[in-house]
Length: 268
Image: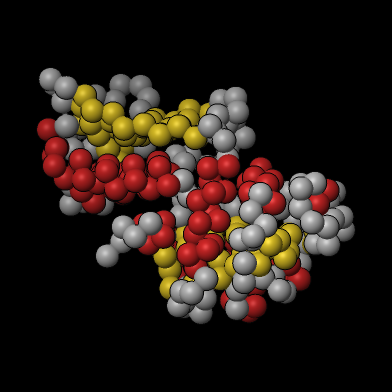
């Protein structure tokens, strides 16, 4: 499968290049995109990952990066998402999108793009987190509002959005399990004299420190017991592995908007 990596010089880009290099029988790098002004522009992508075959130049034109690709993988920033969506639609290239913090306008554009090309969009491409999300919804439905729900997430100091996209997805799963909407059930922050906890609310706590890759805990607490589900990512390779699994799954798909539940066979 021919892959274009959008954001090839970033943290996730490096992780993806490493995984591609380690599976030459399944994947081949066909394009590498970086932001304008990136010092790697014009250089061979093998400079980023010496295990890769040479011959792919890092460029800043999305259409050039997509020229021979079957699937693009994008872990960049929301500011670049619109341009990447337009380019994938124009080039007819399927997309695996892991950029978080999308606005409502970008989500609408994402839906429009998925009418033309198949797209897998997920806030977290870890197989473990996908299963954690499913279990969180199930537990929320079975435990009910007698159990207070709290979501705690921790990431590296450089992460710019909060709560994380994964934490939001977990909150949405808990809300669905309770038959509600996250926007009406969430307590996003607590400061000062907030008063006692309101029954049925879903609380969030955010940590930004050091080089934490990504920790997420969903807690259900009653007076007599506490149940905690925790996922800890220790290497970004886990997200790269999931993204490549999604890319391989997209190969024979019709246009549409999919997520990791579809990739793992969990969606109806």
